[in-house]
Image (tube, one colour):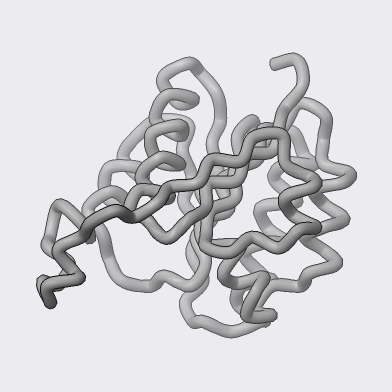
Length: 161
């Protein structure tokens, strides 16, 4: 790949992680190595079962929602990019971890500013701060117009989880 760009999928709508998963599947199908690092989420979901079964996709998740656990996942992801093992890095819910100070902000910013030239990076989450928006090449906002949750309907297996 020539130059890798930085994507942000943000907004209050459903579909940020889904979009990142779709790009991961496309990249894997095109022969790229994908690292899908997930923050702030610990529940088992159907999409993770499929991602781990696909060739060239590695999934990393912290075992707990702490600064130490999130930084460990992030540092492993960065090492994989710098070692040339990763073409597409997805940092799912990294924006939320960043905003809650559960991810070292300076390390994330430094990585984004100095990432390997060919690595494509995706960050997902709500309310990206200006410093992340400025580093991004793509920013896609997913806006909720209507959602069953507004009527008290919880997440359904296979659809929202």
